[in-house]
Structures are given as C-alpha cells and as structure tokens.
Image 1: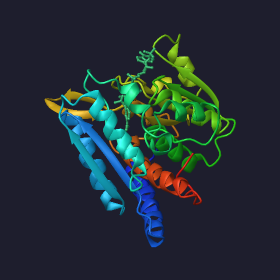
Image 2 (image 1 turned 135 degrees about the horizontal axis):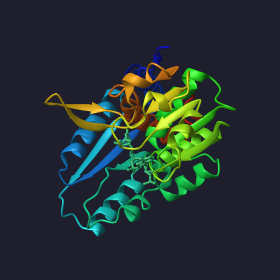
Image 3 (image 1 turned 30 degrees about the horizontal axis):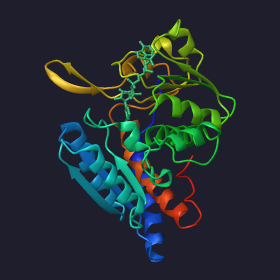
Image 4 (image 1 turned 120 degrees about the vertical axis):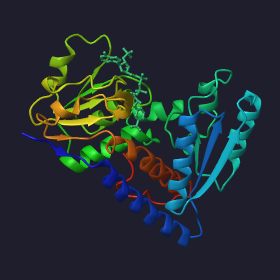
Length: 295
Ligand code: NDP
C-alpha cells in the first residue's frame, strides 16, 4: 500500500483563498482585518518567519503592522507596545514572535496580549477555553493539522488518535482539538513505554517531537493517517535538508495518508494565522465567524 500524500501546500492555498474572500467581504463593510507582528532581535529564522507572515498578510488583502525592536528592548517597553496594540482598533491580531531574548519574560508578554487578539492562541485564557471545550483562539499549527484531518476523513469521531509530543504549542492543543472532535486520544512523550505499540494503535498519528525521522514505518498501523509536524534540518550527502519526525520512505508504504516534509503541515501554519486574524476581526465586530476557518 502506498499512502495518499496530503498536499499541505495546495490545502494552505485553498485556506488563504477562503481568507482572502472573507477579507474582501469585510472590506466591503468598511473593515480591514489587521495583523501586528512583533519581532525582538535579529534571530535569522525568526526574521524569515516574520517576512513570510508579512507577505502572506498583504497577499490576502489584510493590513500588516510590523514592529521590529532592538534585541536589548526592555520588558517595560515591549509591554507598552503590546498594550498600545491591544488598544488599537485597526489591529485584530497580535503575534509576538518567539523565542524572545532571555531577559524578557515570554509568559508575561504573551499573557498581556488581549486574549481576543491572541491569534497564536498561547494566552492562558485561550489555553483554558480550549481545554474546557469553549470558543477560543486556537494555536495555528494544531488548527492546520485539524483542518487537514477533517478534510481527509470527514468526521473524526471514534477514531483512535495518538499525539507524540506534549508541548504547549503543538502536542497538548492538538490532543485537545482531537478530543473536541470525539477521537479517543493518547498523548505520548519521552517517558512513554513501548512507543512503537502505542503508535501502532493509532488511526490518526500526529508526530510533534523534534527528532528527525524517529517514527518509522513499523510504528504505523496499516492505513493510518500520519501527520508529521516535525521540521528538522539535517545534513545528507553533504547537503542541508529538511526532514520531519516521521521516516517518510518507510511510513508512506504503510499509512493510508501522510503529510510530507516540507509541503505538509508547515504551509498550513501561516494560513491558519491569517484565518485566526479574520476570525478575531469578525468576533470583535459581532459578525458571524467565517465557516471552515475555525475549530
Ligand atoms: P518540544 O521540544 O517543545 O516538544 C517535543 C515533545 O516531544 C516533548 O513533549 C517531548 O517529551 C517529546 N519527545 C522528545 N523525545 C521523545 C521521544 N524519544 N519519544 C517520545 N516523545 C519524545 O517541540 P515542539 O512541540 O515545539 O515541536 C515539535 C516539532 O514540531 C519540532 O520539530 C518543531 O520544529 C516542529 N514544529 C513545526 C511547526 C510547523 O509549523 N510545522 C510549528 C511548531 C513546531 P517530554 O515532554 O517528555 O520531554
């Protein structure tokens, strides 16, 4: 069996097209959704992410507000900026690019963002709302995974889902979302015993570990859907390459469907950031939420 390849790049393009459609409809009402991105310092990877976010925001017709701050920016100054963005009616979404330099308290900064503008879904209020099954802003990467799973399976109810990884930004919210769709969810982590057999129980296997190609084909149940969140840079044959947490060549022979790396989950993350910004704009203005763009 060779798995169906879930094309995240194409799927993300359809999400961005939906977002652009909603943005146009909002603009016709005199509302332009706006996303503010704050970058502190000059971390090269973060600079690339912020540049991509800016370009994607403009492409769908939204307003993009970039704030690039010096690496030695004080916590007080950053908090003051966040407060001013909270108060700015042109800004519907605020994203503070992580990681922040070590002299800044990330938790404090994130929890100062107005939860209704917290398009990353990291504010403790949003974490609590998601955990209790209430309407929240949902972290972008797990939301993207959920959208792809719903698109592939239709209904997810009753399926066995295993999420490998329990981070606050991917593993835990992913598990909450799958639970919200009535999957039977197991969360595996570095202390899990016999990870291979836990993984083989999964109809849906989500890998969010950060270890190159750790999940091999013999750990995948025949016909399972495999979502590979991992992004790992490795050296192969003298070249730098991106690989996932799943050993693609062996897993693709066993799975029913699989996301590749690159071109799987990655492109969905920015698409979902844009989706969250439109959702935030609609909620802030008492309008119906865009269908298919939220959890
Ligand atoms: P973290 O390092 O925060 O979490 C990794 C998790 O994997 C931890 O819960 C850890 O368990 C678990 N783990 C580590 N080793 C093992 C092991 N041997 N067996 C089982 N579980 C293990 O990573 P993130 O969640 O932030 O990211 C995970 C991956 O996803 C990374 O490759 C990252 O680059 C990628 N990523 C991709 C995104 C995208 O847009 N596509 C967005 C965000 C992340 P424990 O808690 O016990 O230590």
